[in-house]
Image (cartoon, rainbow, N blue to C red; front, top):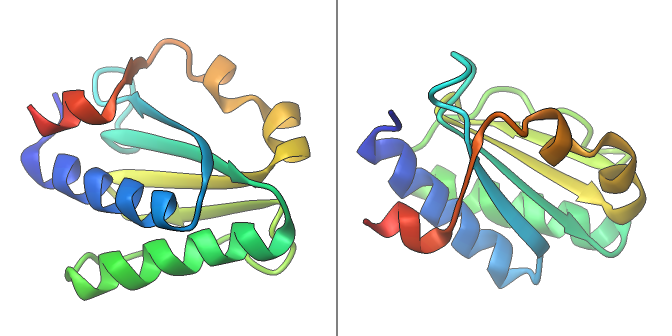
Length: 120
């Protein structure tokens, strides 16, 4: 079961992604099926600059809130940026890479939740 801290962190990350117009934000609760994290957040941007801007905004906001991040993966290529905050892992793709890797299918055993679910 996901903890309150990871819910708050996920909500803040979602706000930061929405602020930069991230598309198709998906939240997958993997707390029951994997020790990796409580949530995967998956979103995409329309181009390299937007993908990087989304990642930058998430990092800035979560950093201001005091959440520590592990090293960032994929920032320079910006086709798949991975931000690992231990309790939540954020995947920001370009559209082509998102379609190719299809994390929602790979992690289909997780529970898809909504922003409203996180607020409860």
